[in-house]
Each structure stands twice: as C-alpha cells, then as structure tokens.
Image (cartoon, rainbow, N blue to C red; front, side, top):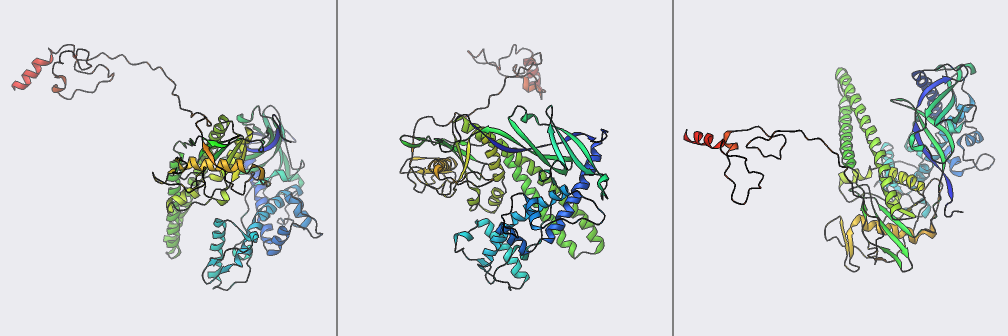
Amino acid sequence: MTGSGSTVPRQFSFTTRAYTAVDDATGEPIGLDDVDTRVGWLLDLIAAAGGELVSRLWHPATFDVLAAGLDRQDRRLPAQGHVAAARLGWAPIYPAGVYVPSRVSRVVTAQVVATLRTLTYRDTAIMALSALFDPATGVVAPPIGSGDHVSAGFARGVQRQLVAFSRRSDGAQSTRLRITDLQGPPQTSAMARLSAADRQLARITVADRELVLTVKLPTSPAPAGRAQWRRVRLTATIPKHLHGRAITDWHLPTLVLDHRGLLWRCAATELAPAADLMAGTVAVGVDWSPSTLGAAATVVEGPAGLSSDYRGWTYDDRGLGIKLARLQAEGQLLHRKAARLTRLAATAPQEVRAQLEEKIAVLNEHREAVGVKRGKINRELSFHFARQVTDYAADAQAQVIAVEDLTTLETRGHGRVNNNRAAQSARRQAAAALAHTAAGAGIAVVSVPARGSSAWCPGCDAPLARPGGYHDAWCPRCRVGGNRDHIAGVNLAKRALLGKGKVTRRRGQSPAVRVAEHAPVRRCRDKNGPTRRRPRHRRVRRSRPIVTPRLGVTPNKHVPASQASVWDTVKSTPPQGDAGSRDTRISQAPATPVADSVRST
C-alpha cells in the first residue's frame, strides 16, 4: 500500500574508485598499480572461461531450454544465473593446472546465462520472421499472429541478417532459422559481477563515509592453488551526492578496468517517496523532439474534465546537442576512412599494407576516443535533462510524468542525416535517468503510445494544420495551437491520466499505458504550469582603472584607441543647446592652429 508520506525501496547505481589497498592477512599496503594488475588477471580468467562456455553452449538446444524456462526435471529455472547453470549442468572449463575458486565460477556462469537469456528473445524472433522471409525478394511478410509481432526497427535488423544469409547460401534456406545460423557466439566482456558470489569471495562494509571491499585476487596469471589467491582490502570514498540519503543496503560492485585503472560499478538500495499513480490528477507530458532532447507540457484533471494552458517548456541543452552532432560526424568520417583503407590494404603489396594497417590502427583509436567523449556528453545531457524535467514537474505539483514509448518511436521523414542523428540520440539513457531522478521526488514515470501525439488535436482529436511550418501546430476548430512539441506533450499527459487505471507493469521496466484513449482537453486561462526560470546574473564589482582623459577622446572610454591622424582631433563646435553632449570638447583652441597649418600646406 502506498499513501501520503510512505516510502518504497529502490535501487540505483554509482561509480567510485579505490584510493588505498592493503593485504587483509598481513595489513601491509599494496600499490594501486599492483591491484590493477591482479584484477586484470582475475578478469582475464573470467573472460576466457566465459568465452569458452558461450562457444560450447552456442547451439539451438540451449535457447530451447532457456525459452521454455524448465530444467531436466521440468522445474522452473530460478532467476539467479549461477543457480540455473548449476541446475542445467553448465560449468566453465579452465586451463590445466589452473586453480579457480568455485565462487569465481559462479560469477562466470551468472554472466554467461544473463547474456544467453538476452539473446533468447532474438532467437525466438528470428524463428518467427525467417518463416515469413522470401529469399527471392528479400522481404519479410507481415506477421499473422499477435505473438510474432516485433518492433519495426528490430524486424529490419533481422531482415538484413536474413538477406545476408540468403546471399551466402545462394538462396537455399530451411523453413525456420535460428540465431546460431545467422551469427556467431558473442564476445564476453572483461568484468567481474561480484553480486553473484558470497562472502567467501567478496564482502563490502561501510564506515565513516567510506566503502571497504574485501575481495580475493590471484597473485599470478595462472594460480596453481589456494595459496595463490589472497584477500585484498580496498577502500573507496562514497560520492558526496550520496551523503545524507536514506540508504539501507550497499551491494557488491562490478569490477572493470578502464584507462584510469580499477573502476567500481556499485549499486545501493535507498528509501524513496512512494508514487501513487492512481491518485494523480496533474501530469506532465514529455515529447522527444528532433531539434532538442525534449519538451514538456502540463495537463490537469478536475471536476470539469481535463484542462491545460497549452504553454509548454522546451529543454535547453546548452549547446551539447551541437557538440554531439559534430562528434558524430567526425566519428562517421573516421569510420569511412578506416573502411576505405581496409579495402585498399586487401590488395596492396606487403610494404604498403603494413603502412596502411598502421594508419587504420590510428584511425580506430581516434574513433574510439570520439565514442568515449560522446558517451560522457550523453550521460551529462541525460541527467541534466532529467533534473530539469523533474524540477518542472515538481513546480507544477504533478504526480505523473508521461514519456513516449521508445519501442514504438521511430525517426523517419526528416532526411538521412537528421534521421541518423535523432536515432543515435541518448533517448533511452535520458528516459532511464528521468525515471531515476523522478523516483527520488516521488513522481511516477509512465510510458504511453507515441503515435499521433504531435499530429492530432488534444481537444477534438482532429488532424492539426501546419500554418507556420513543421514546428507549428494549429487546430482551426478548437482554436488552440503553438509549438508542435508542446502540443505533443499535452497529448502524452492526457493519455497518462486517462489510462492510469489500465497500467501494465513489467519487471525492470517503467509502468506502461498500451492504449491511447481520447478525451477533450479544454484550454484554460488558469496558471497550471510553473513560471519559467530566468537566469539571474550576479552583479560583480570590478575596480576600473583610473585613466586621465585626453583631449579629442571620448571621456567614457577608459582605454582610448591610438590616434590615427591629426584630423581625428578636429571636430566642429557643438550646436547651441548641446552643451551636455558626450562629444563636447573642453577647449578647441589647441586643435585649430594645427588644422589651419595643415590646410595651408
């Protein structure tokens, strides 16, 4: 039950790094570089064993078992990946003479089962779409049953795989293909999810705003026994933004190595205000815009029905969108250059091929750097957008934030460049950041259908006119209009309020409204939305340099320009009544003889 003042637990993630390390048995300090080396040995063992296990399980029978969700005794497979692998008899294999604790094997199997479970959905979709695929035309027929329906973007990706397979096999294929027929086993990431283990491998404690992680690490690349696995105690500082929050549990982190060394990807559970979706009477609709990341508008449900002032709010990305577009174009240019050099290197002589491969390596390195920079900007943009939208909803006293369902949203009709740019925007990351930030304020985030949100009138549900171009919307019947993104925000908020009693909830996803209902939204003059915040510049006193005014120079300029010629100091006497003019000279006598002498020459 949720009510006013109630709280619910929620999980969130953060990152941190260790600043000190000691041996848990002897207490001797260990250098962080040595810790990075030992963690690298652990990740190499996990990645090698995980890659071998995935290759061994890469056959249709594996996906049949995971799709059914039953073991050999027809028992339901547990959600924990390492327990499900133990039920099915899946165990990693290590090189001869290498000893690895059983808890590390748990980490390996948990990561492998999570990857295979994710690919099970793709395998099921490939089976359904391959039965509708025509090798002669390369077209997938529309699905017959509702169970075979997948998103349009996903279906196009599978269609490209089917076309490529048809070309490799000269058009001969079976009735139903599997994912193992179209692609090879995926690569496993070098990371260690310690949450799959227990206290025998790792444990975490909190003391004085610090996280202390005790974990077993190998002392050699190929440990031969238990003695070559020793416990290391790592200490990291809790980030400042977590101080003072009602955190009830700290979970074991995931260890990864980046260019700076060991990185902890941690998770924690805190108590957040409960969001009562059914009691929501004010909703904010967020429309994903092609020009900026998003725009919002407010709808209020009252005794007289739904109302809105139709005055929305547009997010200002502070120029980060332009920077992302530039980085995207730069990354694509580097990719094209590398692809062209790769084609040239395939038929080049040995000496030229070596030079081209060096250039290709440099281009790939630069492209990866551009990708890392884009990822950082996308994260900053997502959380800044989430903070701004949450503040807007809190100021409007909204209980619900409605966002477009990204699975039904597809960018098209804006040209190849704009479509690609909008498709690569961090919308899903921004939606996740919005759900996380809004939950901290007790506001529920609901996904609603996106179709027709900016094309239909919120009042009469008639097609909108575009008198001012693409970004303008106007309804001649209801006589309402404005920015098309603000109109879309009104439609999205309306759908959330009308469908709050028919919300579907799935594990790990935000609540969703599947059907778009209509009710007229009248335009009111009441102030529903918050007042726009205007930046206020702080006044700073600066001491001005004392400059002696010169003749012939405007007095209000503190740093006068250099005199170009003698004519710059000669000006006519100001007219009568203009004694207060800024151009009035103290005395014109010194300049007149000079001018006369120059004219006489």
